[in-house]
Image (tube, rainbow, N blue to C red; front, side, top):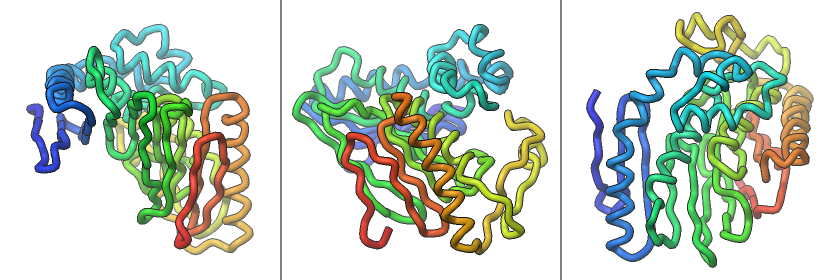
Length: 281
């Protein structure tokens, strides 16, 4: 697998290597933006090989894995999931967010930029200089809302999890979008909250994770593969369980805000960052 690095017509940088697919955009003086993008390209080639070298450990529960991990992305992953170690979680729950954080650091290091972001499949790491802001969309099936991120607030990461996403979920949420201090922290928290948006009902189909992916870190755990029509009381109860977990994480200082979606219904656990749904949402 070779590294792909290309620029879109609008100036955004696209980096792809195996399963890692990034969209990067930086704002500021033209020479600073060019230097920043060059730094990102130079750093990117080592990300996947380093992760693959520690993959067996990264698929273990975090309490076992953390002392053994060496690479910078792997350590970011373990640090992000460590607060959730009372439940079953491996560092893989934060891989996309941790890659975004690592690449953002490479992008902005030594540079003077107004703002920048690294988007790893919807898990986004953000840089904001004083006085700068960024509006980020919230998606389930379509654009359902937005969050306004400002330099003054501590949010620098956004992540989304759900049963229909790139990774397996134990829950039934269509989406859980989390705002946190880093993309890796948001990624781990979104996984935990999405797992809690859950119910037992005949319209929900689950299978062991290993039957879908023999290499899955979730092993024999049952993951959601289909969610059919659900009674309103089941939807409400599932969202309430997820919102309770989001509230706990917010009160523990692990997240800023969260937006939870199930079958077209939404709940918001609000923190200090403005987060609003569209009328359609």
